[in-house]
Image 1 (spheres, helix red, strand yellow):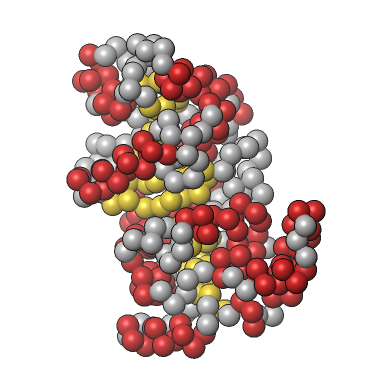
Image 2: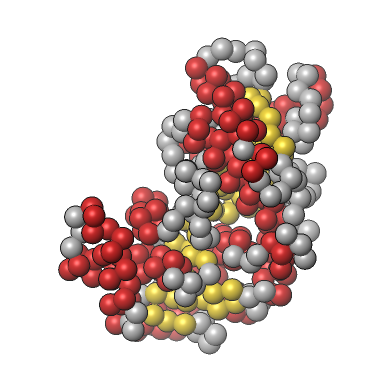
Length: 343
């Protein structure tokens, strides 16, 4: 079974609250209706209530089971504005500016997430990536032991021999243009953490390059080699099984026969399910090539490294993409113990 239907089943057992900053967008409304219909939880739609109702009426979508909030007219507006002011006053922010910023649905949604009034956030349907990510990075704290916020794309294939029963996790494809070795190590660990949480299987993390295991001494290769060692050093701190190897070429990471020919052994070669790219160019190009040429379902960006689950979706996303991203971040909000019966 593909990943998303498996996640839907988990959410049916443990429903969550999903906040959408762009509540009147047709794709968001369609995805929110699916969340309610499939009993996955309660969507929270932000924006002008009249406009959201008009948009839903045009699409013949029922808003039953959904909560509508206009940030500037909400009961929590003053408290959220004050909280944001306290967070940013050392950077010169004034309370009047904080109040103006809090009328932005992206900031209001993030404050709902930070104060546990929502369990997962899905934004970016109508704004640039930087606009969608900025509130998350300004308001939400980092996960313990992590210094880097980044992202992961989740590719879901019908062919289950790829990745984790057809699911492949790619990072970073949307946040850091040229990560350092230290940042790549954090990206590897946080991407693996999401893969394990969603599937309960062992993440096999390949740090990718154009060479495999020392066949080149180019600085970009040396960066991936150093990142591999830094990531491996973090393994004892993790509370889940994880295997990490690199640097390696992508064919050696995914194809067992190629891995054998290129003498890339261990538990990752030919069996990788988490791919870490050297930079944003390679990661973004790779996942879009796979999506277009192979017809794979792609969900994300799923933001990694933060203390609360959020997705920054593309402006080109379909309703299906929005729904899939919501399923992923919704399951992230369920404790591992509830999902699988143990820590």
